[in-house]
Length: 226
Ligand code: B12
Ligand code: SF4
Ligand code: SF4
Image (cartoon, rainbow, N blue to C red; front, side, top):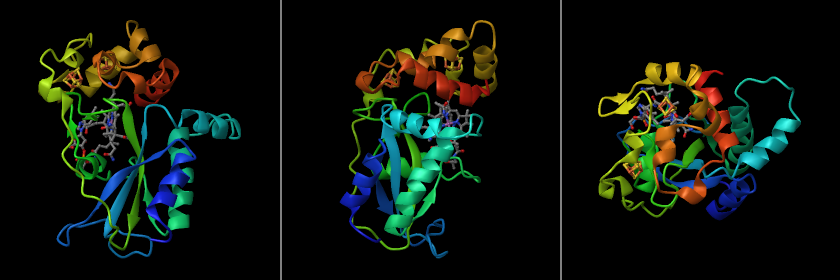
């Protein structure tokens, strides 16, 4: 790695992004390749807590052509790509195909577990956080090992996140993607379209980090192809 982890974190912070821990790959795992084509030894995850990157993204968006595909992805790739170049890493994105196991990486890096919605539950941010990229290095990086975080869902008896969706899209069987899409796109889907997923919003935790309605509407439009 060229430079210090603290400086890398500061470079991300200038764009509302945060360093979300990392880990060293075991010798036996098939790690993705690093900047010079050899196997990566370590990974640092880049993400967001709440909607902190939103104003940075909007400022960038104003300079772009009116119609562009996947604008938030493009912004993330640009910003995280520049940090990767400066610190000697290869940047990857959660939307790169074949999909990289971002949630498994995040569980290792931050000691998190999934909520009943599939979204990882964070002890501070609740369900209001996401991953925008990762930085792959060909050398080991000295990082404190993640401790298992408190999993708030374990003590949440009522589970309101499983009771608010009009079509019960989330259940023990997983996420009924098509049922959700049909509702979001349909005549009764306006609350999900304008304010975001009712199940996600029903979780009482991380309220200070809840994405504002316009940010939730943006993500919902991307998800449902509106
Ligand atoms: C494909 C995908 C989906 C598919 C899931 C299809 C399926 N059954 O696999 C669909 C389109 C349904 C989906 C929806 C959503 N997704 Co999604 N999705 C992904 C993506 C791009 C790839 C998942 C994958 O296959 N990974 C490869 C495997 C090998 O990696 P993995 O770590 O083992 O994958 C885990 C997930 O697949 C998870 N999983 C399986 N089914 C579902 C369904 C949902 C809703 C979620 C959140 C997770 C999840 O279980 C795996 C075991 O850990 C990831 C990014 C990534 N690269 O991982 C985001 C990701 C999992 N999604 C995410 C989110 C937030 C969502 C949404 C909740 C919000 C949104 N993006 O609009 C929506 C739900 C819509 C709603 N009602 O609001 C976040 C989760 C962040 C977090 N805090 O944990 C991720 C990590 C993207 C990101 N940028 O941070 N998603
Ligand atoms: S409502 Fe309860 S079970 Fe659902 S995500 Fe929030 S804490 Fe977890
Ligand atoms: S977005 Fe709406 S339809 Fe889809 S799971 Fe959430 S509440 Fe249900």
